[in-house]
Image (cartoon, rainbow, N blue to C red; front, side, top):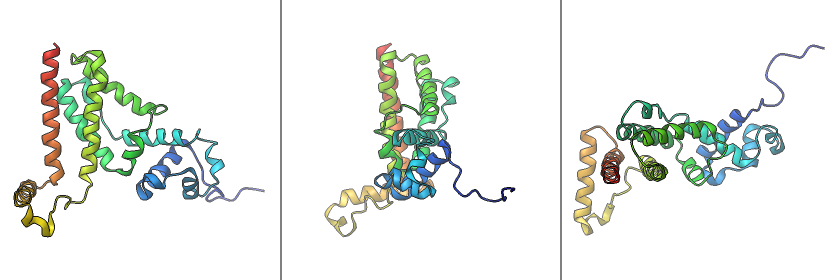
Length: 218
């Protein structure tokens, strides 16, 4: 008997398909809502079926990390001075994680083991920093310092726009309220979210400080 055409009776699973579903689940339900059982339910399979394609939860999170980091371009480290490359990398990195903010708390504390595509991205970054003259022992601390700032900035980008609105208490903190208004007006005049101003100020300060640190090491 010939098999009827159409959708298969059960979903076609693969490591990549499971990872995409996992990222969607994290986006929808948050870090606390992610579990193997919830993921299996989203895919319409039994939890045991997942283990035919992934080793477990850590393997899925490694694949999720790869999907997020696929959006982060690090190729500029082979072409630009380390400081210019770092600025461009930071912008792309922030955008990639701002698209999936609930994933930050999961991935920021998850070992990178198993995420080969992410490791290759980091390989480009550290190779560029080494070519720029950074001592080998300082390369990872430099990268992690910048990365920590980027992840915080990604959360700031998706935070409510009224985070610093003093509301009815504005009269009690007039200087603070005035500076928040000044920030908002400056951002609006440039057609940008306020979080962009904070990101640019912080990134410029970090990179400038790193330049000075490297010059003293040299």
